[in-house]
Length: 177
Image (cartoon, rainbow, N blue to C red):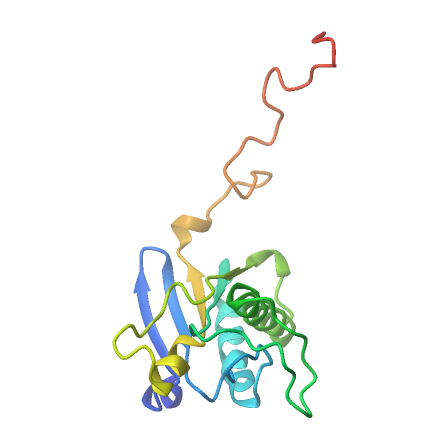
């Protein structure tokens, strides 16, 4: 499914205890200081949306940035808001990708989480200051969560909490029950 992107170094696929991780990396996907989805990343996200739709699993979209300071100056011809810091920028990347994934295959939005790691979880730590490393660290990771981490009974909360209220949590100001 992602063979051309993997061969071009634009997608890395791995698996760990969280699930299947599809990392969309490289300069073609996010420009420095930008969360706008490029045409190249949109094509890859369409493929990922089809996979997510077919698997019917919960998904966490994790946004990342390089460690360059966010430049609040707008570039001419680019309609994009200013980002406060790298947390904000990486979060915007995750949200933009999440919204696109949901719309591409009309997927239930309750399956998704969007998370920001800012610049604090770099993929490339050696030669971190090179343009190539920075491009790899400007990425999103689409984590298709394991079945074990997503199983829940009907009516059960997302957090495994009971559906009913806990005892002794409904008291008035005077303490009467």
